[in-house]
Each structure stands twice: as structure tokens, then as C-alpha cells.
Image 1 (tube, rainbow, N blue to C red):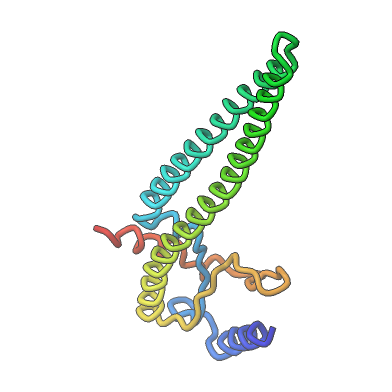
Image 2 (image 1 turned 135 degrees about the vertical axis):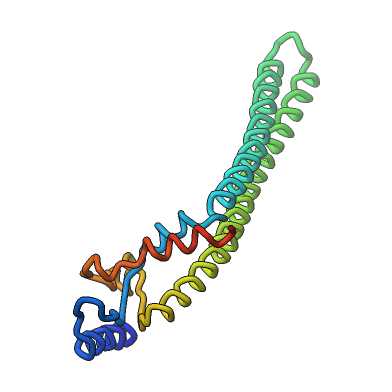
Length: 191
């Protein structure tokens, strides 16, 4: 909360110290980071890699579930056989024990599916975070260079929220939105 008050004071002081007239530098600006991230040359590749990995994980999960369904079908058949009067008592007992083993196998598969799914989701989340971090670092460097060139003292993310969900930027004039300028520079990063 203190940072928010300090930030608001800084913006207010900057606004008082520098009146905005035609051709004069503005000491602060806003940027839409989500829009800029979408323009980064590595974003599409990262999303493609993540989608491919998610598809592989889903195929693995589907395979495990199919195995469980196969064991379930086998269990149902054993249960029918265990009730057959054509079998001796010992034969029916043997079928019931085999069915109990299959029930345990199904539980093991279900547990394995749950654990594997959680692990794969964590891996995807971690990889997404690492990829996004690299992209954001590139963008931040572009923003810093732009701010220095244009004598901008402060650039805020225009959609960011402070603690409690209150938007940090309540209002801004489109004249201080540098999203297009930053996105244009970011697009050229890998050229």
C-alpha cells in the first residue's frame, strides 16, 4: 500500500513539475504488456511448443485411461465368471481373488493418472513461466531503452492491479500509451 501511495505521489509530482504542451516530453506513459507480448517474435513459437507438449501429455493420459478401461472390462468379465454355477466353489473363489487383484490394479492406475497429470501440469506451468520470463525480459529491455530515448521517467502496465484488485492506472490519455511504439520495436528483435 505504501508503494502505491508513493507511486501516486510520484506521478502527481511529475504532472505538476512538467506541464504537457505540444512537442514537450511526457514524464510517464502506459503500455499494454499483453499486447506487446503477443507481438514478440518468440511468443508464437513458445505457444506452439507448449501446445505440442500439452498434446503429448494428454495422449499419455488418454493411454493410461484406456488401460484402466481395459482392466475394468476384464474385471467385469471376471465378476460374471465368479458368479457362474458351472464353476466349482474353488474356481469361483479363484476368480473373485483375481477380480480383487484387478480392483487394486485399477486403483493403482487411477492414482498413477492423478499423479502423472499433476506432475505434467506442473511441468507445463513451469515451462510456460520460464518462456514468458525470457520474453518479458526482452520486452523490459526494449521499454527501458525507449524510455531513456524519449525521456520518460515512468512507464506503467496499464492493466495491472494493486493489492486488493484496484487498478493501478485508473485513467490515462491515449497520448501517453506507448504500446504501439514498444510493440513495433519488439517485433524487430529477431530481425
